[in-house]
Every structure is written in structure tokens, then in C-alpha cells.
Amino acid sequence: MQSKRRSLATLQASAAPPSGTAEKLLPESLYAEIAPVPVPFAEHHLRRVRKAYPQEPLATVLELFLAEVRSTRETAFEVMDDFVRNRNAPVPPDLRLSTEWLTRTLAAYDPAQTMPKATYKNWQRRGIIRMEAHGKPQPSSAAATLMMRMMNRQKEHLFPEVFRTTEPDYWCNVIETPSHRPEVIPVNALHLLPPSALVWTPWAGAAWEDCWHIIGEHETNQAAIRFAGTKLVKGELWWDVDVPDLEAWDRLCASLYIAVPGHHERQVQDLATIVLTHVYAKNVPIWSKQLKTVSARIQVRKERQE
Image (cartoon, rainbow, N blue to C red; front, side, top):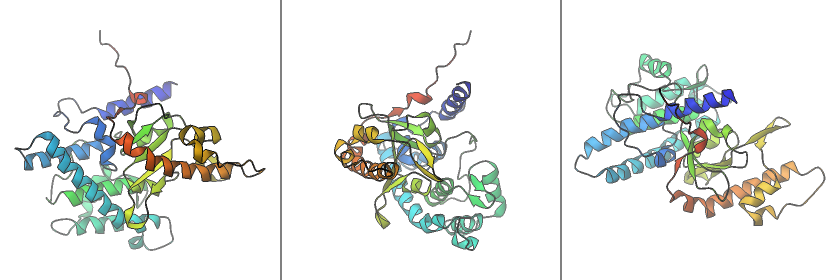
């Protein structure tokens, strides 16, 4: 319990602006809409957009900003998809997501068509580019870095001066039960949710990681959705749900379950995929219109200072 409280406190602290910094422009309700871009990156770019349109109200600036994020996110996914899927394949570094590939791709969008190794190492050291292993950038972190490069054509000051190593990779939408309201939560905090909670993101690249179900096909990939909990079954990572959980979300789909000896777990996983697809199509458009707040599971009461 103590370790969980510490992790909650860490996430809550990372969601707040550092002392003495400017007030945030991005509402918490939109944190999940900018995935896979971390909130500090988004704030940094949003201030540039606001300076470009000084006479426009903040609501208009936010619309312009979100439209740019959506377009750039789609492009980044298309550019990266094949290479990310090859990242563990025995192929040359320029055919998979690697330091070499990312350096070359960032250079292609740089105003001077360059990406100095010293700059890349600096970004890596600061945690701007997060790594899975030596020479292997973490996919969503690489995507966020590439998106920032695509959206900002200036050579310098691409990222905020301060970026905490504890900052969440990005934020997701979550709804714990059909009777709950949707909230936003860091993707790094899904383990704090009930296993049957539904989590979704407009970032289709989330499906590059285990246990995300991609919504869309080929060039029309538009999102990813999952159940929060996972379990290891014979070396495979499956959703930690059962038939009653599926019934709570979509009784019609769950009714397709047939009790067959030796075919329970696999059948539940197959039905879970159908449930996720149906719920995304039927409910997510409605939930997305509701104002979202930060999940209470990462809200920690501040101790009173005496």
C-alpha cells in the first residue's frame, strides 16, 4: 500500500506545473487527445501557436492546435508503423525502429536536414527520447519526438527546458464501469485501475504495445482500446477479464459465449475483442463529448502544512 501511495503521489506531482512556471493553457480534459505527446511538450508547442494567433480567443487556438496534433499524429503513425513492427526483427537498423532510423527520420524534417548526434544524445539524456534498450527507442516516445519535429520547423528550442523523468509517457481516456463518467489517466498508471476498466486513446500506435486493440485498418487507423488488466497465460499476455465483465459492457456480444470444455480462456479473449470494437463504435463517441477530469485514482490529498 505504501508503494502504491508513493506511485500515486509521484504521478500527481508530475501532472502539476513546476513551481514558478507559467499557468497551463491545456485543460486536463484534453490531456488524452494529444497522445502520444507528453503534456509538457504539448504546452510548449501550444504557446507557440498562441503567439502566432495573438488576437484569437484561447478556444480557437486550442481548436487549431488540436487539429494540427491530429493531422501530425496520423502522419507520424504512417511513417513509423512498418519500422516499429520490425523493431525486434533480425533486419538492418535502417529497416526497423532504431537510433539510426530515428536520427535519419528526424533529420528529414529538420529545417537544415540534419540531426547532430550530440543533440540526439542530449535529448536521450534528458528523457525526451526514452529507450527500450540500447539503440532501441521506445515507440511512443519516438513518435512524440517526431511529431514535435514535424510541427515545429524552427531549428532550436524544440522542447521545454524542464522535462521531468517522472512525466507520464502520455495520457489515455478511461471509464471504470458503464455507470462511471469518463476520466483521463496516464498510460503508465493503468495498473491502478480495475482490470475490467475500459481504456482508449486516439493514438493508434498504442497497439504497437501488448494488449491494445487497434481500431481501423491500413491507412484509416484511428485509435486503440483495451481492458486495463492483463494476465500471462502460457507465455501470452491476455486481458484479465471474464464473461461477467464482458456482459457488463455488452450483453449481446457476451451472450455469444458457449461453454466448451478446454476452450474458455481463448473464447473469452476472442469475445473481448468483439466487445471492445462494439463499445468503441457505440459508446466512445458519446463519452468523448463528456468533460473529463483526472482519474481520482491519481488524486492525492495534499498534507496540510502547519
